Amino acid sequence: MLKRMAPVMIFLFAIILFTGTASILGASNGLFQDNPSEADMLQLPLDDMDPLLEEAMEDHVMPGAVVLIAKDGKVVKHDAYGYAARYTDSDFTEMDDPVEMSEDTIFDLASISKLFTATAVMQLWDQGAFELDDPVADYIPEFAANGKEEVTIRQLLTHTSGFRPSTTAPLHEIEGDREDKLAFVLNESLQNPPGQEYLYSDVDFITLGVLIERLSGMQQDEFTEQFITGPLNMTDTMYNPPAKLKHRIAATEEQPWVDRELVWGEVHDEKAWTLDGVAGHAGVFSTAADLAVFGQMMLQQGTYNGVEVLSEEAVELISTNWNEDIPGARSSGLGWELNQSWYMDRLAESNTLGHTGYTGTSIVVSPNNNTIALLLTNRVHPTRETVSTNPVRQLVAEKTGAAISAWSAASMKDYVEVLEARDAFAHESAAHALKLHLTAVHQYELQHDAEKVNRHMESLQALLEYQLDQELITEAAYDDLMMDAAYLIDSWQ
Image (cartoon, rainbow, N blue to C red):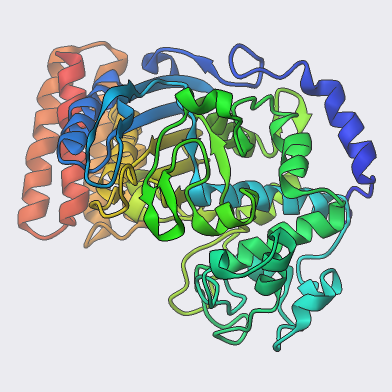
């Protein structure tokens, strides 16, 4: 296997040369603002997110949110809703001067931080620092304690190491400084034999954070800034944001059990907090615009605005499902999750990448659609005892998918093929009938014959009704295609 062997400092020097050329908007292979139609997307499904997000806030799902949707390098939606800070305590006492959410609000990303850790690890892999199936103990000798000699770096990245979800004792109760607490983590024992089960674990990524620091000789926040956020010009992405940025940061929750008042401007996760705000599993703060750059870098095979953050080979490894042979395991690449319909909804496919964060954040990166869908919320403000944000995550992905597939009859046909791959039809003939119908409709679209488009789309809706009655299509696929048909008809009227 060929890999770059340049030392860290040479790599740093090379990417600094490009830093001044990187920008979020207006670059040749970067993101820029545009109309949905320029990205072959309908405006109406994107607009339909707004009242549904407002309804979720009225139902106290979250105080506020920022949504960003980008396709083909074009940002087609970037909107803010509700409040970044509204309450003074977990009793929902209203602030005298609540802070409205804005497009550039900075969020505690929570577990989306793991993606930055995975990126840093794979940058070191790109440099030839290790092989993925090397035992972790080769680089962190004390990790071998308590039967962990055979746990590999790949197993940490895919949550198959055997660790339990969290540490055996709360880290904030461990005496000593950051190094003492990391030593406690490295001494932990396994719950399961390595490589046999999937179990999502913060311990995996805290350990990976230590690996980064051991291999690079730099603390993880310094490494991230110099090799990821700096080269990508992600100036609003950081660990431990300075106090001067508090007015731009979304507040989280009151935490009396660790003697913290309302957490605002500091990391919410207790383990990351007791590790001085810098940990492999949590701690990164960012904006939607910055996080979109990160997602676009992944869509562009590790490169953004001429800066190579990851090799194409590293991106391919990150995007591979390594858990296929483990019964019941979540599809997982290296750090990134794959094909998770519970928040990716219509964008979920075998190569769709994503992750969520406990504070109410989510990122979905769809290579097949060349699309990024971001939802950043402060759902733990002022308390984590709120309803799940998963329906809102699904909503954003669903409407993003509808804006793509309802753009034209040809796009709808593509989506029928996606549904067919998901076994949404009882017989191949049912999918074939829909695709044949949509092919004919597309010919009328090319002729700009609105009357015939609408008439034949109404016939398609009738065909869908028949297929549902005959149990030839799943109810979920029926709902999606009926919604797309309604959007398409509306666009031609």
